[in-house]
Image 1 (cartoon, rainbow over the protein chains, first blue to last red):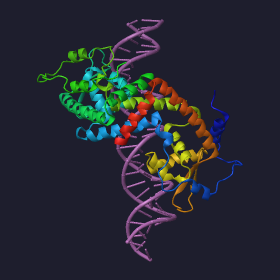
Image 2: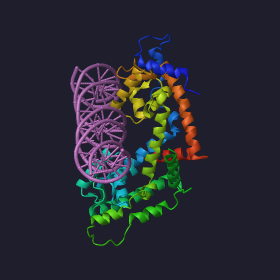
Image 3: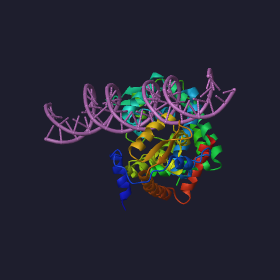
Image 4: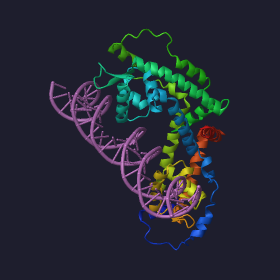
Length: 182
Length: 182
DNA sequence: GATAATTGTTATGACATATATCAAATAAAA
DNA sequence: TTTTATTTGATATATGTCATAACAATTATC
C-alpha cells in the first residue's frame, strides 16, 4: 500500500543533479515542437474537477472582490474578520481573538497595532491578569464595522445571485463540512 | 445538519446589531472585564455564514491535507498543478503554462528551475522561436506525476466521502461558478 | 532598417505566515 | 514562602507567496 518504487526512484533522482544519463531516448526538438499544438488553448481538464484547485480559485476570486469592495474602508478580509470577532467578543484576550481566527500570536501583534493606530480597536490591561490585554472596539471601530457589515451583506447577496437559488447556502454548508473534518 | 438557512436574514440582522445606541459612555475596566465572559468559547457566528471565510478555511484544510499526503513526493499543490499541466500540454511555452495556472512569469522561473533541478521537467529552446522554451516532463517526472495522480484521486475520494453523495460535485460546480463570474 | 512587442530572466518589494526567544506576570510545585 | 513552570504579549527572524520594473535576446511590425 505504499507509494511505489518508481516514485522513490524519482525522489532519489532529485538528490543527484542528473549526472548519470539514462538510456532514455531523447526526443528531437521537432517532436517536442509538434507536441505543443501551438496556438490553441491549453488542456486544463486534469485540474477542473479537483476540489482543492477549484476551491482555491474561487476563494481568490471572492477575496479579490472583497478587497475591491472594501477599498473605501481600507479593510482587507483578515482585518474585517478581526474587527468582527472583537465586536462580537469585546474584552477578550488578544490571544483568544487570534486563536479563534487561526492567527499566530506574533502575527496578531502587528495587526492589532495597525487597528489601534487607526483608532478602530483598543488594548486595555486586564486588572485581574496583568499579562493579558483586553481588546475591544472604539466607537469609530464600531461605526466602521457596522458600515463594513452592510457592504459584506451586499457581497453575500451578489454571490448568492451568482450561485443561484440555494447555491450560496449549499456552498457554505459544504465548505463547513470540509473544515469540520480537518 | 444546519444547512445555513436564513443566512441572509441573519446577516441583515447582524448588520444592525444594536439600534439605538446610547451616546457612548466610556466603559470602565471592570465592565470590560465583565464583557469577556471569561473561559467560554468565542462567538464566531458573524463569520460562520460568510462565503469568503468558509471558503478560505475549507481551502486551507484541503491544502494542508494535500501537503500531508504528498509529503512522500515532496510536492506542494502548486508544483503538482504545474506537473499536471505540463504533462497534459507537453512542448508548450513556459509563459503559456504559467498563464494557464495564473502564475506570473517571473515567479514561474524559480518553480521550473526547481522541477528541472529535481529532474522532473525540462526546458528546450524552440527552433521556430528561439526566445521561448518548450517545456515537458522527463521520464522521472512522468512517473512521479502518475503516482501523484493516484494519490490525488484518493484524496478526491476521501473528500467525496466527507461531502456526502453528490456533495463533491456540487462543491466543484459552485466553486467554478464563482471563478467564472470573476 | 528602425521601432515595437514578446520571452525568459533577474532583482526587488510587499505581504502573509511560522518559529524561537524574551520579559513580565501568574500559576503550580517544592 | 521560595522555586519552578506556564502564560501573555512582544520582538526578531526566516520562509514563502505574489506582484512589478527592468533587461537582453529574439521576433514581429512598420
